[in-house]
Length: 283
Image (cartoon, rainbow, N blue to C red):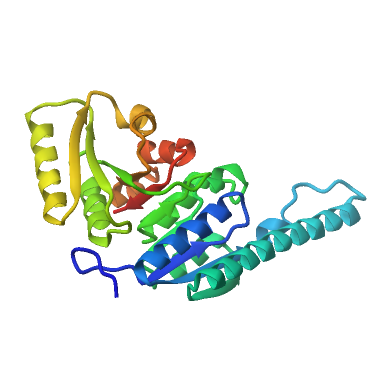
């Protein structure tokens, strides 16, 4: 039984099988972690029949065409889902990974929220919310997922990359500290190099935050570097990760602000939309 350095472990992985181009990477990432931790993967599909029926205003005499269009949408969705399930099942069998399939209908976000209660980590392509029309309000969907307890989340990147260098975006807030602790305690990947980065400039307070964060990570057995960057995280986080060849970005956000303001933090929202590498999102 493989445990994190602090006694925690990943034994159940929840995988969203949306049938988008991100699905292949999500499957590969889930299998990688399941192999590392001896975990079982639950692959979840959710067909939103209500949304598929919504095709907009139907002109007089167009009901027959509208029904054909609805049927076509159902067929395409079903085909996409079946292909994702088949690929997931074959890869798990080949790798010797225990797996389950949950076929659901209805709101896909409510489905993920329900299943996340009994899993240690959730993996899927959050960027697909913006790119593939899963919802008309992707920001609201993300708020629902995060504020109702779906965390930690690994938001996969368009292409698979091995995780060797991990960037922890650390502002000193309790939310970013929780994200850092959650990553360190779960320890998803072994033998990684951590870099804790404070964006917004260097001063005595920032230097102390980085010193304390570095000590925390080292006490848990990690190799860690620290750095203060005189630029905003919102505008330069992704650029920094690219320039420094980081493989994963760890981020946190305030649940309280999500509920009260009904807004997702701009830095996280921008990262989800723009990042070409995976994100570890936690509270």
